[in-house]
Image 1: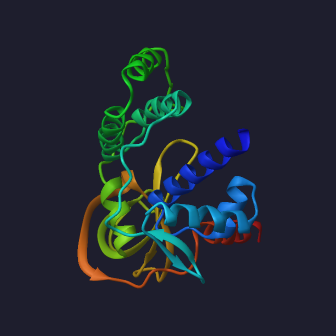
Image 2: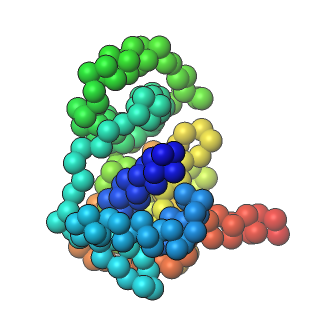
Length: 236
C-alpha cells in the first residue's frame, strides 16, 4: 500500500512540474524523485493513458499541450506558511512593483486555501516580523518593467546617474539579468552600447527609463557565468 501511495504522489507531482515548466526532461524528474529514468517513463505513460495530453520530445523532454490546465492546486500547511513568510520579506523590498505584484499573486493563491488553512495563515501572518537590514531612502517601481524587457530581449534607453563620476549619461542598454545584493538593492546587469561592455546599473540611479521597439539577440552567457567571470577579474 505504501508503494502505491508513493507512486500516486510522485505521478501527481510530475504533473504539477509539467504544468509549471515549459519542458521537463526524464533525467531531471528521475533525480528529483530519486527513481530510475525507466520509472519516469512508466509514470509518463500512466499519465498519457489517463488522458493527459503530454507532448514527448526525445531530445528535450516532456511538455503539456498549451490548452491543458490543472484544476486549482491544493497547498499543504507548510507550503502556505512558506508563502506567508516570503511575503514579509518582499514587503521590505525597495521596488514597489515587486511588492504589489507579489501581493496580488498571493491573494489569488489565498483564494484556493481551505477555510481552516485561511484561518491558520491569517494567524501566522500576525505573528511574523521581518526587519530590513538597512533603512532605505529610495524606492524604485521599475522591476516589473525590467523583468519583461529581459524576457522580451527589448532594448532600453536610460538616463543613468553615475555616483563615482557624478555625471548623468544617456545609454542604450541590452538588459541581461537582475541581481539583489546584500543591502537589498536591485542592480540591473546589461550590455551598454555606449561602453561596449557589460555594466551594472543600480535601479535607484536610473532617472529615466524607456523600453524601445528594437530587440536584440539573447546573450548566450548565463548569470552564473557572468558572476564567475567578474570574480576572476577581481582576483587579477
